[in-house]
Amino acid sequence: MSLVTSEKSKAYWKENLRLMLILLAVWFVVSYGFGILLVDALNTIPLAGFKLGFWFAQQGSMYVFVALIFVYIRAMKKLDRKYDLHEDDD
Figure 1 (cartoon, rainbow, N blue to C red):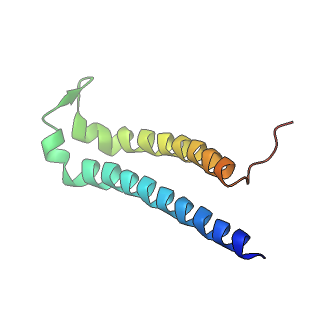
Figure 2: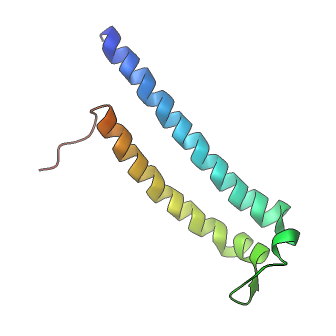
Figure 3: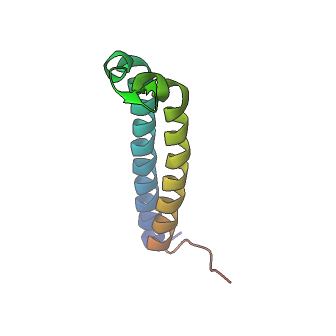
């Protein structure tokens, strides 16, 4: 493996790990922060007839998790193209 490939690989994985840590932090804040720690404050805000804290604890964190999956897919496609690791579309 050449030095250029090694440096390129390290840079790729550094960006990949940074992306994963950011998305995991968002998921943690939404699921644990909004669903448990801030539930009383959020419960003062109604959302479709439900308290917002309850909604995040029951459904909101799952919706955010699914959205984060799609964000990760899109970001990884962009990252793969940046480092020329993408598969050619036929």
